[in-house]
Length: 140
Image (cartoon, rainbow, N blue to C red; front, side):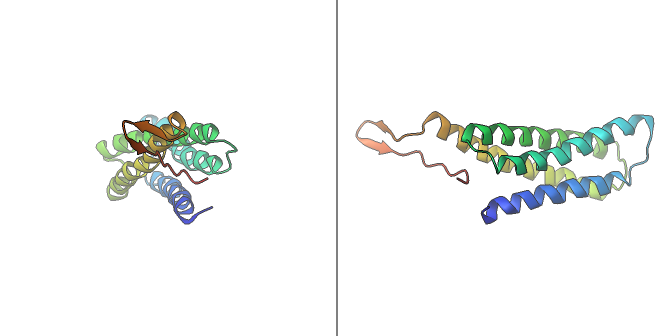
């Protein structure tokens, strides 16, 4: 696994652990219990799906797993914003996690947009007298 992929895997792992540690500071109430459970599932699933994508045998399979990872990061961001707006738990930690999840969702988003171009145009294409090559790296 190259260094950039390993770094993202580690960031997603650290994010999931940080979310779990933050949620320990949020009081269990009827309002928060289900949201806490969903946030734990989403934050841990984003890293697990990205890790699984690294072993994908095909680019479409990689894209599917990376898509799921991105959805889970977005869901995590949504719930973290709810916790932040309700001022639940350790507020500074929550603010950091909202910022971190916002940054994390940009990475798979970028990878997926490049991969989508590659899947649509796997070969060089021509436009007039100029030749354009779509060169997309997705870790293979």
